[in-house]
Image 1: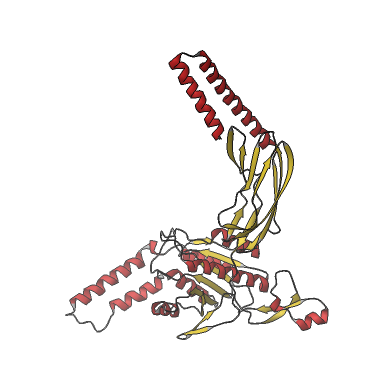
Image 2: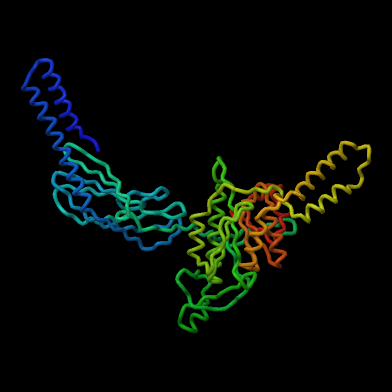
Length: 440
């Protein structure tokens, strides 16, 4: 709260009168100064009383057509505000717009003057530009009279809400473009396509019209869509490998990856009426599926948790105990090194001792393998889809692929579009995944 320019001018006049009264011993000036200061004090108490009266009588209610939308969708927001404005008070009501939201149409500000009670309707169209949980925070109010003004933010439950869940834009592409990475195929695809016809069912809101079977629709006079089965009889297990949080910020391809995951979740729900999403970050399990996951639950997890994280555990070049024993034997029995090559022999000896220490160190075996084994046991899937930025050490990804193959499953690895990097190509070829797909 602060004084207006008029109030500041009157206070300055009062101070001048006080100065004049002291230096010229003028009782009239002193009485005038005291009267001015008492007037200011009375106006302050009056303004505070009117402010409390205004705040006690205000009511706010918002309506939105849907609680779940996509990034970039237009959301019509209707606000109903009941205000009672005391005399000589002016009020400016303004919606507090959340960061990441732009106003496409309409005005989020309203001016009220005069002594009256008024029902205000504010309608505007908002466009969320980031995914996550969007909360309508509340109202910002500016109250003004001739002497004082005050800015007040109303953020409690009476003036906030509802909550809008903003999903990432599902990444789909109409056509497929294939590149050959040696013996493995990389497809530019953002959602899984069905492999064979599984059955028919009635059209439901949200289904893709391209799956409508027009012959069946004409026969039963009701929209009928085709259901396709994927690579297996169960819905795929979707694993999102979150990158580590770094000071340089989040790479742009990460948001592309989140959109691609959102598209796969939608496709899984349409085909199997079930989704299973797992969030990991390196050898750290962040989130596992819940029983009977619905598409809304998976998308909410994606909104609230799909961000770079600080990895509590990192196991660089993690190897299983069997692989370490095999490597130790290969190093110790390396042929073709003569006794005269002391430098090479010393190097091999040092490497062998390091590998042996990893093999004997109990801390080199993380909790991650046990968590993944339990995960695959509770939620068995024939197809596992792994999304990863595929940078840095990928030991945990290779371990996941190995575990899926041990359970006789297939793995689809989705990676960024770094096809121009030869090193990246070799790494993809050696990942062990059955199929490598590019999101871009």
